[in-house]
Image (tube, rainbow, N blue to C red):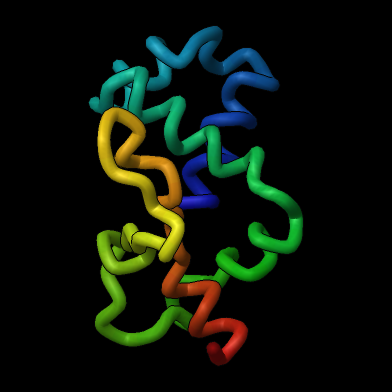
Length: 99
């Protein structure tokens, strides 16, 4: 996924494509999905380093859906702000750090 993000950014930087919409049309994805992938490049360097694992070194059987799972912390509030306290853990990061 980071490889895709870097490719999309390179296309924008070198002028191959001028917008997310153009990349989306070429990649047969939505502009929103292109934006989501590009957002990966804004992660802190230490997280990028931890998750930037070549496919051949990734744990066998690990799917993209398993990489991020929602967890609810003990201080989660219910009601209109029900999402407060939910954080996302990276299974890949846990695996990398042997947690």
